[in-house]
Length: 324
Image (cartoon, rainbow, N blue to C red; front, top):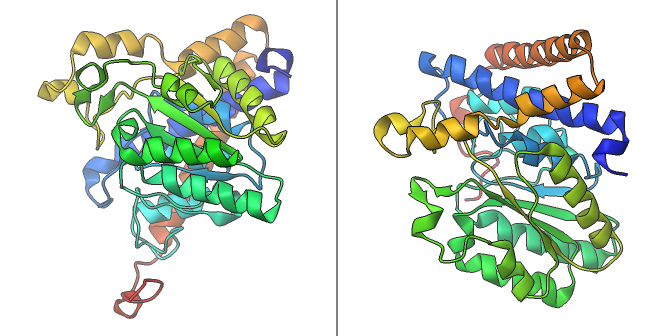
């Protein structure tokens, strides 16, 4: 079933995107207070990818993410209280306040932990897919990574191994055209990263990363291919992050990117355009949209309240839950 065939699917895609956007905008609003000490890599502008992919995943499926992980974990259904408390370094956090934004984990939701290492999720997610196959489990491993990670050697190695062993793994390249502040045009002679997967015999697709329907439908085909035992699949989803590489500011102000380029992508806001599509088609009413946003906002505010009330770790916890 395509997203266009199901009102329930389209409402879920919108709900996931709105949840990510409201969550990230809340971080932007509170970060200047400086009581959130962790660096944050915001997902604003890329919401259609996390929503479209994760709407095709089951509870038992794994997700391996990156330093820009909030969107993936929210879309997969990770515990919101635990995420927010982790951002504040509190004991109620999903990593007990010891990991911060770049090291979120929620194994109950299949979110297996993230790393600040560029490309680090590739080998981990591929290894998990090998474990799935060896155990004969009915699940898949979805790996999110950026165009910068495609420059790492582990990218080629993971693709080759996954293809060789026909592993149940979905590679999702979120190409936002920048590795920190280095544009893709300065790094890649061929911008079609998915063609590298095809060189290993991995089927690939290149949906519009700002169109939730397009991502959903491509991910649906990919998931069906993997679950049928046909091995890995690769998606390249082109998109654009609105904020700087790290933090709540817009880095065009520092000369890192052209303002005109940002403005072009702001006009293609995945949340705004999808809302308009559903309103025009009758998939949602203005009242229903307002109610959806209100529920999400209340959920986010409740998580912030939980995080604020959660205590900080004590000195005795310094060496607990760590390898010595």
